[in-house]
Length: 263
Length: 83
Image (tube, rainbow over all chains, first blue to last red; front, side):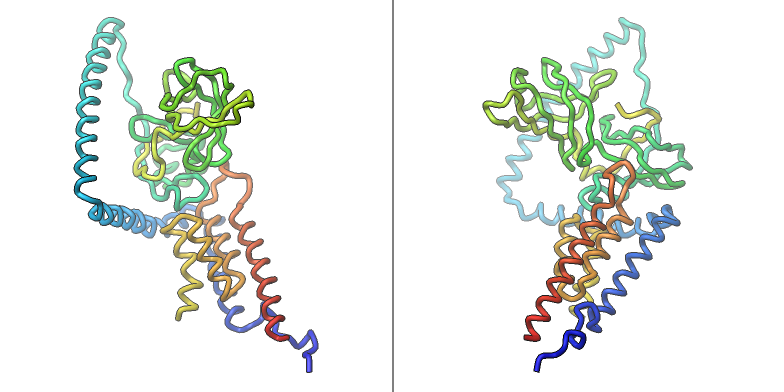
């Protein structure tokens, strides 16, 4: 005989599922309340776990390196040695040129002042295209400060600040827009964040090639990335360019937070 | 034991693995409890949501939709088994 509908087992009320669901939701609400009421405490609680994850990722990477073939490693090593030699020579040449110009013009390059902060969490673990760094208002960091990675490359700006931690919104976050220029023709473009890279649209008439450098708008040449791919419909007046950022934000471990606005 | 591991794993994976991995584990946990995707989404937003990056806590919303779908699927399957 068919059971009346009010007697059927309810999908929500089976014992095992209900208890497990209640426990999970309880944990989720607890974490949410901690974030809302004590945001600094939340990060402090989870920082050791994030550090373990970062250390484990490094160890796994080292372990996997051992499985690469020796021939491939040797070839990669030779290529890197050649690159290093070329870059060292170029660096020496540029340093000499810089010294000559400084002597000629009588100016001094000022050292970048800022707060060095370790990165606690980064993409892809952090799904919102943001970093969590271990320095906050107690160290002089304020909302809107510019965040630089190695080499002085700007990668984002401070979005939220707590006494000892801060959250950094990356330029590569999905939906972020930045004015920039590209190539020898200095074509103006708007970079659109895609999570870990940028895309931009340029008029088909502009002579942009793979490998062209992209710079953020602002004083001087602020590196943003390199053109990796150019694609688009042949009949369209514009073409899309994919840009690899100058810094891989997924491997950033230290940043410098400076008291400047983002370009 | 296995049920407990499958249910707890998505929340732990948020701390070590990219979000899509946690999403897949949450969908697997939904077989045991349909509330898993919502809980994982809320924890992901509590840990990582940043003002200025994204207008909405998108992972909570996605988790809520996934939970609703899991409840509907589970109700349909159990009703089919009854018949």
